[in-house]
Image 1 (cartoon, helix red, strand yellow):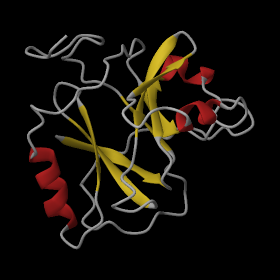
Image 2 (cartoon, helix red, strand yellow):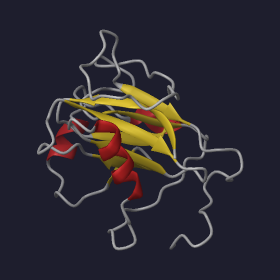
Image 3 (cartoon, rainbow, N blue to C red):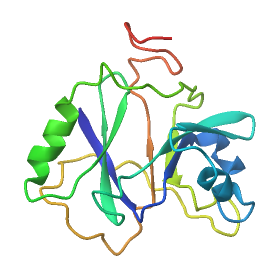
Length: 175
């Protein structure tokens, strides 16, 4: 898996949505954030305008204030991994190797524009609490957990690889 970048979490969930539809999300200004808070713990998606977005939650057991590292497979599957341990690289690698065959899969949704926006559910995609999206920052995986940088790492975007038609599923993916 290729390293895409990282998100700083303060314990609030993130929204992953087709970048075209992200303007429909208003975290605090239209109380969309309250809709997230009211969802059942097992919810993996939420309606946004005419579309759907995935919810990405951090693990408060790891830490509320922590990095979530983002990786992308060669077929476009994203992995969001949160850890805070001395052997940071070892734990990230082990998490990416963990078998997921018996996991409960969330709902699938189409990323029609080819760009996925990922941002804190408390923020607005437009409006009073808007935070500009940063592009994905591929590169080497951080060696340590570390503290956040001064510039915001509130959001990232990821483009599925050109070899996978947008909206299609890799062979063997359940429908």
